[in-house]
Amino acid sequence: MPFAPSSMHVESTAFAPNAPIPKRHSAEGEDLSPALSWRDAPADTQGFAVICHDPDAPLVKDGSYGYVHWLLYNLPADVTSLSEDTREGTAGVNDGGAVGYGGPMPPEGHGVHQYYFWVLALDTLTELPEGLTQRELLDALEPHILGMSRLVGTYKRD
Image 1 (cartoon, rainbow, N blue to C red):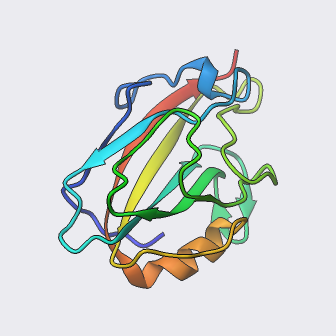
Image 2: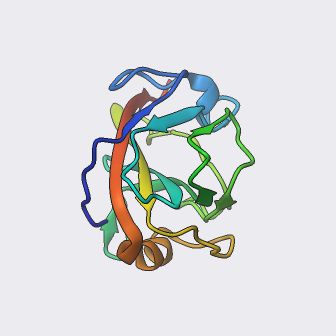
């Protein structure tokens, strides 16, 4: 993923930065995407995308490491928050092969994993089709990224 730091701030009412993600947002629980919000997007932002990625997962796919749990895109600039289990935007395919959110569930005995909820600010409102992979999404978004920020949560399997 390209790196475009910004002053954007991402937060969730479900968990604090670097704190455990509640079980209800995991594949062991209700598997609901957590509520997210962000502020201070770069000037000229026209759209957003969200990516949830677990860099601690022991998986290499398409030359990328970790596990993609969620791809959400085609979010207009006036959307600066997502409710729990949101239906906003267009979903991509996660590394479990499903379209939409797939919550944390590290392999048994693997310990605590970190989950990065990235918000990407874009210079355009995208109209991309449902079901893109992370590579396809980033190939389409890279020339349009104005800034990005993240919220990191943790999860350990019961």
